[in-house]
Image (cartoon, rainbow, N blue to C red; front, side, top):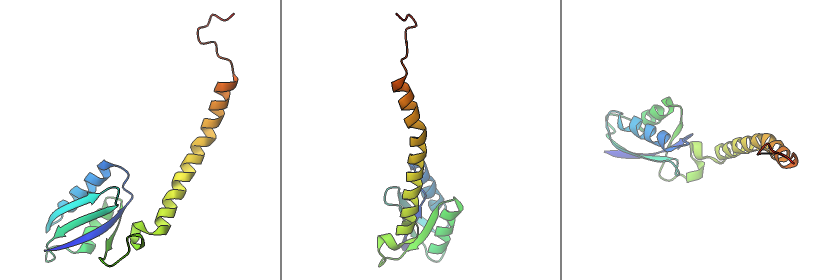
Length: 124
């Protein structure tokens, strides 16, 4: 049999990892599939006469994730969803989300600190 490493992008939780792993394991000819969430990789052992690495990547893409075949000699950061531009886009997305939450949380904090609140209703 053969084995291939796929670069998988867009996984955010263990449920995503499990879904990708099950999808790969369900493909004809696949003998094992191990997906690393933090490594953004899937290591798949398969029978090359039944399925190709490109078909495995397509199966992962059908779930809505980015997937590319990584050749053994290729640098980890030059492969598909792991490229520096993809990582930059992800970092930019996280930054936008942070700034958006900051816009709403700072006024709430300032108002909460500036206004006196009588929590017991008795007053003086």
